[in-house]
Length: 107
Image 1 (cartoon, one colour):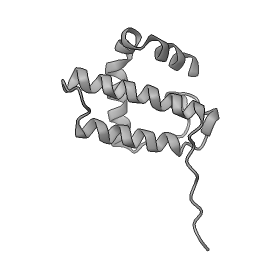
Image 2 (tube, rainbow, N blue to C red):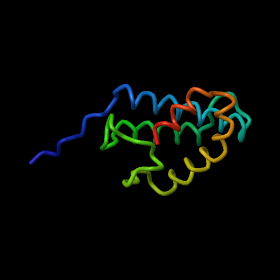
Image 3 (cartoon, rainbow, N blue to C red):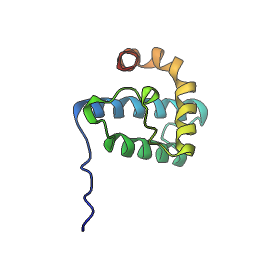
């Protein structure tokens, strides 16, 4: 009996989510760690978030992760992502208003 691996989901909605996550983590690293390039910790969080988005069980029909009944992040990464969103949420309206509006309607 062989294990069947789930194919990664890279549809347009998942790609948009990845763009938003990328911008949020980039902004967080610039504001908190004062770096123009992602530090190792932020790069690790971004890689993990991209992996989780690619393997999301809801695929293209996914809503915002905050509204999801299934928490697929490990607790440490979940806390890190919450900190990123808490710190960058207000800044996203200023730096990336289009992404902010899209994210609000995704809920």
